[in-house]
Length: 292
Image (cartoon, rainbow, N blue to C red; front, side, top):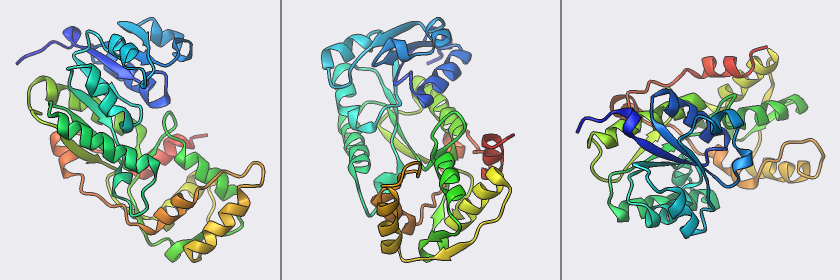
């Protein structure tokens, strides 16, 4: 049925976070009314608090407070971890748009990936019209700092050791494209295009080798070439364990290194056709991050 954005109240869980605050601004610019749901209202930018429909504090493990925070919301957007979806679904009848992760596909699951799988199961069992978007690695000046962490590490390394000479594939997505996908999902629910729980992978325009990925980061961050050598992943994991003890060196976990030996390439036809989002090229995204 037709709807006016000004009549739609959307609760954004995690509104004070980097992704959540950007999303709130985007929803407000579309004319929606936004309830900013935060753990501590003092962490929300004052300029954002003044333009939101309401600012409400909640703990995602406290169902009574969460229920009160989501009151009046026609749609709930969860930018917190997907593991909390069962708690959210239990306290509101509203459809949910949430962010998961393509880490759910990994051969080396961790608490993050297992939590995403648990949230997806909860959504499917609930049955309401909702959508769980699974982004690949997120990067962006106002979002996740994966690329910045890697750039900082590259500055400290005379050579870059990669398993399999970095032939495995990655398909990063820019933070603004993630926001666009979330915003695009909302009218699909309001207009009953989405009638049951759905999941959808969102990713960058094409998969590239990790070798090319780190080379592009080095080029855009410092305009230099790097030397890449092939090293067994167990050797890199051992070196990372030692480097964790050194001050100022970005921390890389064992599971992160193991996942370098997995191809992460995804078909984004559904993202482009259903959500109407064509993602930004990696070269354009990196240029924006490291613009001098």
